[in-house]
Each structure stands twice: as C-alpha cells, then as structure tokens.
Image (cartoon, rainbow, N blue to C red; front, side, top):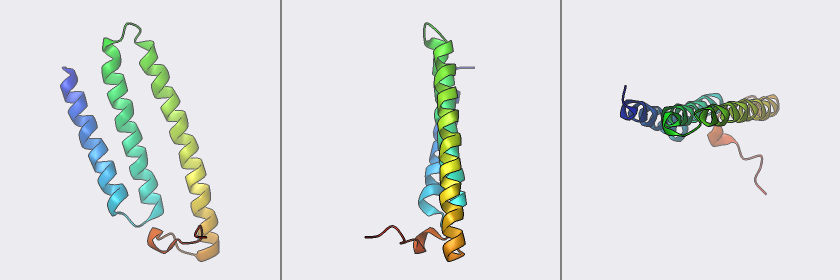
Length: 100
C-alpha cells in the first residue's frame, strides 16, 4: 500500500481527536481524544519509517510516544480523580481551581 493511505488515515484520526478535544466537556473523553491524536502520530511515524535507512528508529520513536501517552493518561486521570473527589463533577467548564 502506498504511504498516502496511511497519511490520510492519520490525518482523519488526528482531526477526529482535535474535534473531540475542542468540543467535549467531559475530562475523561478529552483525555481519550488526546490519546487518539497521539496514536495518529504513531501511525504516521510507522508509515514513514519504511523510508528511513534504519526502520528500527521508527519503532523506537513509537515506543517512546506510547510510554509518554501512558504517563499522560496516568497523570491526567490522577488529576481528574482528585478534582472529582473535591467537586463531585468533571465538567471542564467548571474547573477553576487553578486560578490565582
């Protein structure tokens, strides 16, 4: 398959994730949309790694991004759970606890 198919699929996934981040109010669904955006970047890296002299570099980058996504999900969910225990809601429009 040509690389353009992977790039188009990656762009569709990224746009879907971006739309979800910009329109959702639930913090958990926003985190899921961010994960979709990171996975679209992974798909793009793997698609283009065929053309690098050493294809293993793409795999290393993807593994790094997967680790970064796991850390982001863990920290994000910890913050959401801490806020939910305090306010009993996770609507991001009402979160103003970090204001000065």
